[in-house]
Image 1 (spheres, rainbow, N blue to C red):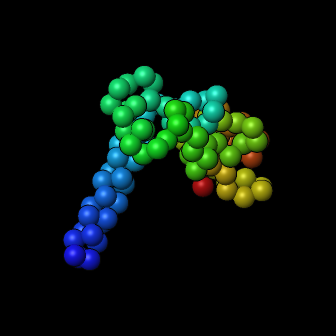
Image 2: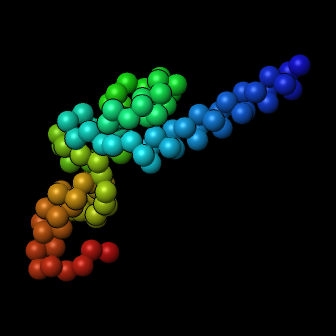
Amino acid sequence: MDKQIEEVLDRNAKLQNALEGMCFQFAGWDDKYGGYTTMGLSALEEAFDVLGWNDPHVYLAATCQWPNCKKQRTSGIPTSNGYMLVCGEHFRALDLKENPNGKECV
């Protein structure tokens, strides 16, 4: 019986990971809250419900590291204060600040 329970728990974990991955891929991004949103799509609403997520689902791991920015991060850039993962807007600002002569980032 313990083996059956273990198999069910393992399958549930795999299903949860797959559902989360689909939400990360297909859900929209809400710049106001810094998280994923269903955009009113019923399939995503059901997925969020199964996962126990609010809509929007605040997700700091994918949010721009610029102070007070809630946009989704899309790029990384080395800065004088270390490497930052930021949105496109702040990437351009940092690129100009860190590389005023237009040198390519490495």
